[in-house]
Length: 271
Image 1: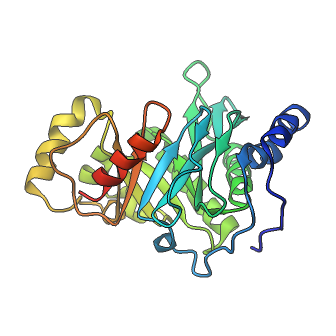
Image 2: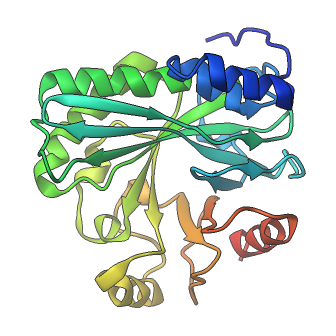
């Protein structure tokens, strides 16, 4: 898909866009990521075209205009989808993101199930979720999409159908990444049957499974699931003694990024 030419958006223009386009979610996300000149989409649609280090930029104001765009990309939270009953409630990104003009972007969509009103996981919900995710893939400079969904076992069929439909919608030109609980990468084979380009094992906030994952990495070179063997997800505040071989590192920071923490993330990602 060819990106449309757009003028870089000034900070003042960002504030104006926020006021007038609050109801237009795709336009809002595009306006909040500033500046965004057009960038040619990779012909092969390969994740290999992304930098080796991707910084997660979650829902807070982030200034990352100082990063080296050749070595570092940004996986920014673009939308959150709440599954409630038979509804899909879409919450757009509401925080500013200041980035270099040449930055490679990955649009992250977080999916959450409402515990107060369990989702029906219907076909309608699948279709609405796919539309909401696919819209983020059309933003300028976005080279891939990533879905962050801690699907429980009863939600796996829904998740598999969603990913299959999303792949049909996006074709092969837009890579699909998902985050994965580390336990999925050790015990479950269902990841390798998904129409995705990678699953990123989350090697932080692992809860009761922390010890098991650390022990597994002491004795195994790679995760069992093939989908989990190219990338890892780490956090600045939870260093691990051993990391599996990887080609790409996603780094989470519980606080706002600074030049110092970016340098630390770059050093850790190459360890």
